Each structure stands twice: as C-alpha cells, then as structure tokens.
Amino acid sequence: MTTYIIRRILQAVVVLIIVTLMVFFVIRLLPGDPLIIYVAQTAQLQAMPPEMIEELRIQYGLDKPIMVQYVNWIANMFRGDFGESVYYHEDVSALMIERFPVTLHIGGLSLIIGAVFGILVGIITAVRRGKWPDKILTPLTYVGITIPVFFLGILMIYVFGVKFGWLPISGYTSPFENFGLSTRQLIMPVICMSFFSIAANARQMRSSMLEVISQDYVRTAWSKGLTERSVILKHAMKNSLIPVITLVGVGVGILFGGSVLVETIFAIPGVGRLLVSSIFGQDYVVVQAITLVIAVAILVVNLLVDISYGWLDPRIRYG
Amino acid sequence: MAETQLTEAGYLEKTPRVSEWRRFRRVFFSRGVVVFGLVVLVLVLFTAIFAEWLAPYDPYKTGVAKSLAQPSSEHWLGADTLGRDTLSRLIYGSRTALQVGFVSVLISGVIGIPLGMIAGYSGTIVNNLIMRTMDAMMCFPMLLFALVLAAVLGSGIWNVIIALSVATIPGYARVTHGLALSIKENDYILAQKSLGSDNIRTIFRHILPNAFPPLIVLMTMQLGNLILAEAGLSFLGIGIEPPGAAWGAMVNSGYQYLKISPWLSFAPCLAIMLVVFAFNMVGDGLRDALDPKLRGLL
Image 1 (cartoon, each protein chain N blue to C red):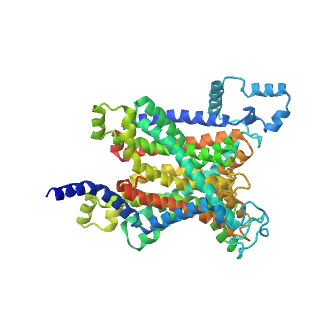
Image 2: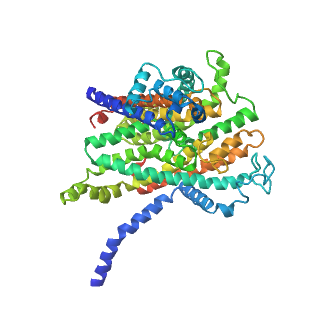
Image 3: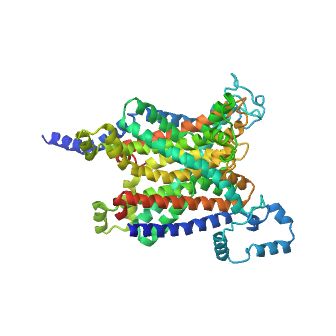
C-alpha cells in the first residue's frame, strides 16, 4: 500500500508541474505584448511612451528569459502572491478568498446531494429492475445527463421565480448573515448543479449494482434466508460503491465547470462568475490564478480518490 | 454430390459475416429510444444541410417581424428583439452545432487516438510523458479549459472548434491507451511480432482495428458532449460572432425576455437537449450492438 501511495504521489507531482506549465504558457498564447497581462488594455499600452513600457517590463520581470519568469511566477505563488487584478486593483489572493467560499458552499452541497441521491436512485432502480420505480427513474437519469445546465436553470427560474414567485431568482447571501434567505436563494442553483451528478451517479450505481447482485456471494446471502434489506445494504451495496467513488472525483471537475454557467445564470458572486467576467475584462492575472487553483484542487481530489480506491480494492494496488 | 459440398462449404464460409451484420442490426434497432435517437439525428442532419430551403425567412435579416413578436401563423416561434425570425435562426443554428460537433470530434480523435496508441505501445518514458500530460489536461474541467483557450485565441467559430478539440483530446488518449494495453497482450499480436511485423504495422493493422468499436461509441457520445459544451460557451458569449446563429447564444439573448417570450430561450434549449439526447442514445445503441461488454465502461 505504501509503495502504491508513494507512486501515486510522485505521479501527481509530475502532473502538477505540467499543469503549472500549461497555465503559464496558455496565457502567453495571447497575441501582442505580454505586458497586457499585468497592466492594461492594448490601446492604453500603445498610448504609453516607450520608456515607460520598458520600465514596466523590468518591473514585472518580463525582460528576463521566459523560464526565469515561470520560476518567479511559481515562487511568488508559494509566498501567496498571485499578482494584482488589473480590473479590481486588488490582490488576486484576496479576491479568491472572497469568492471561493461561495462556490465551495454551493458546490459542496451539490456534491453531497448528488452522491446521496444518485446512489439511492441507483440502488432502487437496480433492485426493482423492470418494475415501476425503474421505469420512471431510469429514463429520468437519461434526461439528467443530457439536459443543458442553463436550460434547467432557466426552466426553474421561469416556473418558480417568474410564474409563481416562490423563490428569489438571483443572488447569494452568506448563511451566517441571513440563513432563511440564503437557503431560499440556494435551492435553485443547488438543484441545477446536482441534477447532472445525481443522474450520472445513479447510472453508474445501477450498472455496478446489477453486476454485483448476480454474483455468487449475493446468491449465498439470499439462500441463507437474509432479509432483502440486509442482502442489499450489507452485501451488495458495499462492493458496488467502488466504481461510484471515481465518479465523485470526476464530479468535482464537473461542479467547477458547471459553476461557471450556474453562477452566471443566478448572478452568484462565486469564482465561476469571476472567471467569466475576468475573461471578458481581459484580466488575465485573475484568469491564470483561478484556473490554476481549480486544476490543483481537482488534482488533489483525484489523488485522494485513487488512494482510497487502492485501499478499497486491492486489485488496483498491485495492477 | 460435389455440387452440394461446394454450396455447403460456401454457405458455411459466408454465414458468420452475414449474421454479424444481422446481429448488429437486430440489437441496434431493438430499443425504441435508440431508433428515436437515430431518427432525430437524421432529421437534424437534413435540417442542417438544407437550411436554406427549410428556413422560412433570412435568419440574419432584422425586422422581418415586429420586435419580440409573439408566435403566429407567419412566425411559428415568434421573433427576437431585432425582429429576426426565431424558427429560421433555430434551423441555421443546427448547422453551427453539427459543424462544431463533427469537426471537433474528428480533430480530437485524429490527435488523441494515435497519442494513446503510441503511449500504450512504447516504453516507460514516452508512455509517462504522454499520459502525464493527458492527466494534467484532465485536471481542467472541459468547459473551463475550452473557455480559457477560446478566450485567449479570440472569438470565431474556428477558435471554438480548436478549443473544444484540444479539451477533448485526453479523453480519447486515455481510452485508447487502455485499449492498446489490453489488446497487445493477445496471442495474435505476439504471433505478428514473431513473424517480424514492425511496430507501426502492428499498431495500424492489428491493434487499431480491434480498438475500433469502443472508439466509435466514444466518438458518438462525445459528439453530444461537444454540442453541449459549444452551447455552454456560446451561452456565455464566446464563439460565433453576432449575426451568426448559435443555439447557446440564442438562449442567452432570449433569457432576458423570459417573462414575455419564454420560447425565445426554451426553443433553442429544447433543440440542444434533443440533439444531445439523440447522440447519447445512438451511442448507447452502438455500444450494445458492437460490444456489449463495454456496458458500464463507456
């Protein structure tokens, strides 16, 4: 097990280095002077006198070879310095500390709901295969993986916000400030975000459960005269959960991707919306920082998933 | 006597091929939803190809109807703020969606499949180099990756295609890598090697054809995801430039008028959903018909 963990961590370190290289160089693909990343719009930059541009170039270290710039960039981040936003004139780290909790709040809730309901639906549809719960829920899971996030959002806004006026259609309030309002504002975004995960988890759980319940040891459990509850929950569920764990890892990525759309639709001041507005505002320092933090988060979650996977299923470890 | 033997031999030789194709058809067409998906795809393809003839109005011409006109017998789905016919724009939008989907799937497949093949077939260093890069790319959520890439490259449909293609390369590479690893353990590959066949020949003549069924399934399902991602990007305002029609962009512009004309955004949403659903169903059907063992894997 220890060798397995060490091997996975070493791999993750290599991947991390490639991730940082990608984030650094993708932003450098921008046409024009790289100075626009740190300072201003192209038009403003052209209006500056050349001496001033030269001075700025030295200030931001852009006169040095590109690999030195990369190393400096990494070194700064280790000190918690992600640079300064061109648009907000604020430290990017401060901006992220302000925005990330919002996204994590919504994303975390959606992840939990997606896992719990997904597994539940998967078990029900597998155990009652061909019966009415399966006939109703399984087609719904197909809808769940194909419906565009924004369609679900708009549909809910139309029905619950515009037609009936039951729920606020936008905004975010901290639960510590006003718990009632916060919860009401969260209902639609969380449903919107978790719908896909519920469906995807349910499909995975259903197929792995179907495989497990046809195994010999489950038949033995039945023939011992155990109750359905005991056979399903104690014998079958544990083993069929293993493939679903990987989906949780994938789910984190999907949630960050989905947050971009959901936060735009519901006007939630999270990191996804910040990313979109920074892209349109050409605030590349922010884009760079957010992309990197999200990628590292996903990398870490996947590493943990892999390790727990190896722990749960010894075949993986030695494979 | 000799004649019957001949026909019998011919019969015996021919049967497996025929039944293989028959079995494929029987399994593929056995599920109603799969047939439904196929019909939808054929209709959408038809719509995209013959958009000029099918669209009742010029999709780019403003003022063919009153601004935000309600659905009527002349304008079945009403019109947007600029008075452009929604149905015509919807029809032209299918062109954008399918173009982005098919071209991106081809580009990413053409790059991703050989990468996975090479990684699976070469030594540790090359294998690690390729696969760790793919792992790194997979750390970025697909939509986010494409969003940042498209933003850096600039707007325009081709940049969206490039962004989406690059974002989906690792998916192919990973699946192909896994396939290559398992296929090369087969005895017939060993036999090829002992006959002196070189790596390139072995990869292209023996491994690739055996990896084909799962890859076809993956590509079909990926088409749905790509169309969904393109819709997401154009919903955010990245992609096709203004007069052009893209479903996601239509949703975004119609969304502000949800109260008065909900179908302005509902119609393109339904179109996206239908197409994505159809690709998923056809992918499912292909998987069951080509290789039922893939169930739960793809």
